[in-house]
Image 1: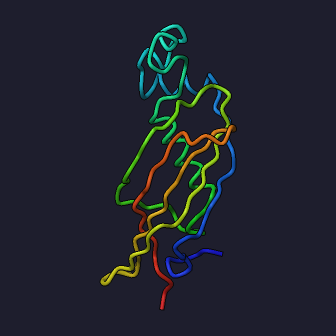
Image 2 (image 1 turned 30 degrees about the horizontal axis):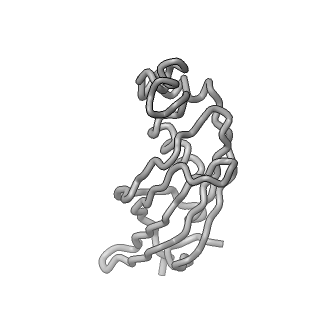
Length: 147
């Protein structure tokens, strides 16, 4: 079980639980955080480059964050971050899509001055068809095992 920075290895993989995104979820998030017509109105969405109602990219990011937490890549430790690299929305997330997050540890950098390390996990969210819809590479701060 991963519990500390010291337990992580480059190449380790993590998989989250699955979650299904409803039309109501999309409309509710958009109304509060991204009130653009193509996220809130089916006719406007049909006439946009999205060709139909789709979740806000920020909604997809929030879902991915929740799924990353459920994957528990750092055991009992919270997911503290120092930033995100290479964030991309690759395909629209539609009502009824079921998302799952997969991650791979791609870099481990121990701190020279603090009891922690920097972990980079390449996360990708997939829909029920196995299509990548979102990817991001957070810069996580994970404590090292106490000495």
